[in-house]
Image 1 (cartoon, one colour):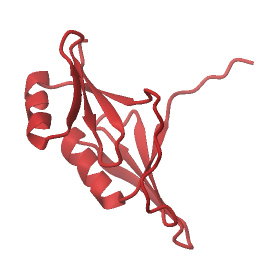
Image 2 (spheres, one colour):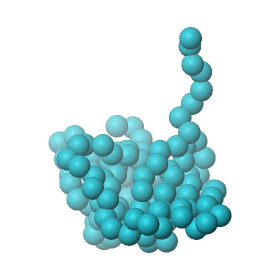
Image 3 (spheres, helix red, strand yellow):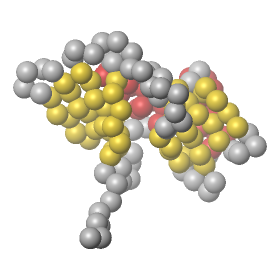
Image 4 (cartoon, one colour):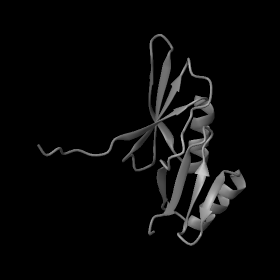
Length: 126
């Protein structure tokens, strides 16, 4: 069977929903497009999207999980393509203090989100 479709979203768990929403908005311009809360208050899902609305980042907050998440030692990450001036965005992230790794030879860098997720930043023409 051939499956047809498209990528819809990627999920990450967060310990402080409002702090994470603010970070993704400030660092990457993502905005909330959908929210779902459990009737019993046990979880909240917030979906963030970019201006093109082609993909969503789902932030999951769990009431009974206030401690940091163990992210392991793998290299899982989310990558964002920067459509505007890459150098200016890099400078902005430097000013935010969120750059955690750079590879200038490869023309990329990573920023660190509040819950220690690494987000790769690439120029659109890379």
